[in-house]
Length: 269
Image (cartoon, rainbow, N blue to C red; front, side, top):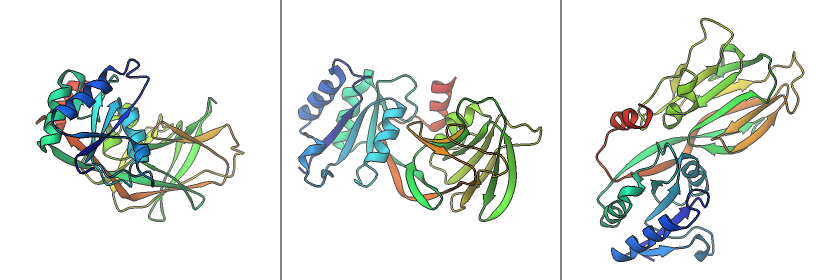
């Protein structure tokens, strides 16, 4: 299938299947084929691009699933914010036509590999959030960069974010907004119990280590880590979380000429 496109749709955001059918029709009208992920024996169909129908959460989940495919992703927003997506439903057909014609640009977004106690767990596009799980008490987390202790954060937790994730939870917690194609890692304390605790921006090549202290008996379900808002990993006293740049990247397709700052103003007012 030299001119095939894979469609991944969030059924909760397209309950009637209307948008999925519109995408299929637009692809066929422009001489392209529709591919199903089950058609490839190794689960990796040879497609030109992947079209994701949903919101930011759907796109992030897809980015993890297809990170080894090598195909770029066009997100069509059928959710609420849709900050990561490259088109809206009102211009769906025009976006698909541009996609098939090759009239688009690709943004390469860095990802992070997360491991706990030396065992790799996930790759994230947005962020890893270490926080309490429903208990109203301060947690203290030791943060190291390249083996050197930077600070111990007392508060509700820590966000480790990519530039793509800088406009998510990181933004709500007072962290810096970064141009999404930048290469850096953002470390932001959540509600720190200190007047001097601030967000820190590290190099993309730095290795971040978060240590759960042993002086307090943290056990499940006191503390845990959420990855891209989808996977929750319980943590306990003495656990070490290592975050570093991943070899995988997410390639996002943009079919319009709007800039990051225009999107920032439009989406986030």
